[in-house]
Image: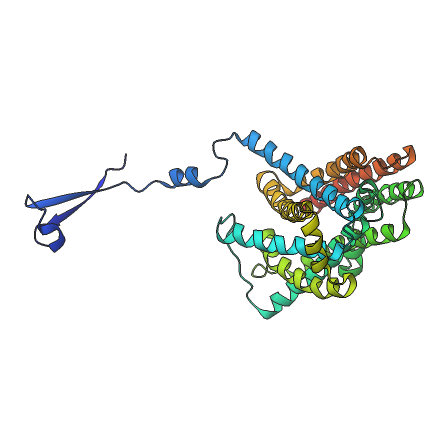
Amino acid sequence: MVEAQTWTTRRMSNPRLDSTATADHEVLDIPVTPTADVRNSIYNVGSHLSPNLLTALIIASWFMSNIGVLILNKYLLSFYGYRYPIFLTMLHMISCACYSYAAINFLEIIPRQHILSRKQFLKIFALSVIFCFSVVCGNTSLRYIPVSFNQAIGATTPFFTAIFAFLITCKKESGEVYFALLPVVFGIVLASNSEPLFNLFGFLVCIGSTAGRALKSVVQGILLTSEAEKLHSMNLLLYMAPMAAMILLPFTLYIEGNVARITLEKARTDSFIVFLLLGNATVAYLVNLANFLVTKHTSALTLQVLGNAKAALAAFVSVMIFRNPVTAMGMTGFAVTVMGVVLYSEAKKRSKLQLTTH
C-alpha cells in the first residue's frame, strides 16, 4: 500500500493560513497519485469488455464500414444520380483530414508525428497524387459497373503489386508466388467475359484504381524507408488527406463544373442529400480508423485475410440490395480470383519464412 502524502505547514509561514490556524502545525492531506494501471483503466476505451468481444466488435465494425462505403458510393453515383465522383472523393479527403486531426490531437489515439523536412513533404505529396488517382478511379468505376464486379477486379491487387515491385525495385519473388498469381488473372478474365453489366470504361478505370492502390504500397515502401521518415498510417492519412483535397479541387472545378452550387441547390429541395454526403464522408474515414484498430488488436495478416472475405461479402450484399444480375460463370471467376489471392498470401508467407531461416 502507498501511504498518503502529507504537507506540513509551519504556523505563520503562510499568511493565508494564519487566520485559520488553531495549532502549531496545519496538516493538509494530499490524495494519493493514481498508479499507471489505474490511469490506463480509466482512459482505455473498451477496457470493461473482454478482449475477444472487443476484437469481434472491431472486426464487425470493419466489415460494416468497408462494405458501407461501397454501398453508399454506388447508391449515390449510380442510383441517386449524384454523378460527381471527383467532388465526392474530395469530400472524403476533407472528412478524413478533419476526423484525423481530432482523433490524433484531441482524442490522442496515437502520438502526433510531424513532417521533418521538405524532402519528406514532397514524398508524402507524391503518395497523395497516387492516392487521389486510385480513389477517384475506384469511385468513378462504381457509376458504370456493379459493386460485385468492382470487388472482383479489386481482388487482383497482388498481381499489380508484384508487377510494380519487379519494375520499380527489381524485386523478384519465388516461382511459387508467381504461379499463385495465375488463378488471380484467370478468375478475373472469367468474371469479365461473363459479366452481364460489363462496361469497358468502368472496367478500365477500376483496373486503374487497383493498379494505383498497388503502386502506392510499393512507392510508400520506397519513399518512407528511413526510421525518421516512417509515419504511422493514421499520421500519414492526416497529412495525405488535405493534400489530396487540394489536388482534387481544380480537377472537380474543371471537369465537374460548379458542383458546389449544384449540390447546395439540390439540398434545398432534397435534404436527404446532406445526410447521404455527410454519412458517406464519415464512413470513408471510419474505414481507415477500422483498418488501424483491426491491425492493432489482431495483426496485419488478419487484415489481409479479412480483405479477401470482405470482397466476397460486399459482392453478395450488393447483389441483394441492388439486384444486379450475376451468372454462374461470373461467380466462378470471382471465386477463382479470391482463391488465387489466398494462395498468393500463403506463398508469400512461406517465401518470407524461407528467407529468414537461411
